[in-house]
Length: 272
Length: 257
Image 1 (cartoon, each protein chain N blue to C red):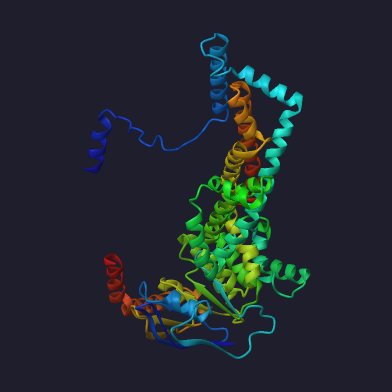
Image 2 (image 1 turned 180 degrees about the vertical axis):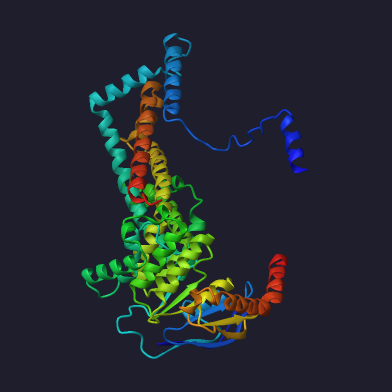
């Protein structure tokens, strides 16, 4: 009976089961993004060369490259860039160091958590640039208020990502270490720190952007040198090629920081 | 060294989990703990190993541990609890790092533990590169490195497939064969309990109380023989009849929770 049923089924025409599993697998091609970027720049350049766009409002890419070259040759590029890099570097380091210490304290101590989270919740939403006038009042008109603004912005994001990372360390690993009588400091060093590192490095990506945003904002409010001051000055003088040169430099800086953090992730999180 | 559960009771808030559990694990003895889901088996093991403070009663030790034991009560975890950023060798060495042992002595203990679990060729491998069975071998190797007097095993095979379970069970039988090391073996698998344990503590539904302590009427060496299979099966059926109705109730309780 079964054989006959099978035979009659075979005699009928077959049809393929339709494939329904496509999509929802995001995958980017290696060169797709670069090709798209090159295409946009080429169209932009062609529109500029054909005088389809007023160069005062949108100078062509060649004009921006020329502006960057002239800035580099005159030494102004380095003057502005070094001022910004110094502010970002010192501010980011100070904010990160404090954020890591406070984040670990909140992650590991009940007292620090109850106090720290209340303060962070209250202060984190404040746009840090709004504090710059107050910081100028406290610290003078030199580099200190700008660095402090960046450090404050970096501090809160770092502290949050660090204690979130500590919270995310699997409790079973901590219990395992405790079951072997491993001391507290060794558990922090060998279990909690590496366990929290992915979240900490992810936090670095965010704080690098925060630092860049704040340095430009702070330099626009009160600085003679720096990429933010340069961009503002170029805008005031309607030098849009210079203005966009500054924007491109900021973009390249952001990309470079992203690459460094990516490299750190590859080196430190190779086990993932 | 004996491990004593002395009138242990435990509550999580208003929820009573264990009620007046008492038994003794003698030196070199293997005691299995079985019972319906949620009866407090793992909680009891955590209390026995000092990872959880009981509401009342205590986990006690009697007699001195072996002189070379670095951690007399050592856990083998259900989820392996391996450091994913450390190699097999580093995972096994981890519990030795804070001891006063020299690097050469640590190396010797790690080598010995890796050899006993067949992991010597995998020492530079990371956990993510290993199968579930091999990961649990790393967990066992790490436990052996500290020369435990009593292994506290919390369903160590439940996350593994049946073939791997069988292979690791053979490893456990081999490791515990000489009686130099005792074990408390928490499991829901009655076959594993009958195969490995000298005595089986049967807990009731929550709050877990001791319903019965069943002594396995043959040595572990005899259990490998064909003639023993029928007896072991009868033993499993006996224990199953003790917990079957409560297991059904426990399952319904979980579904309605």
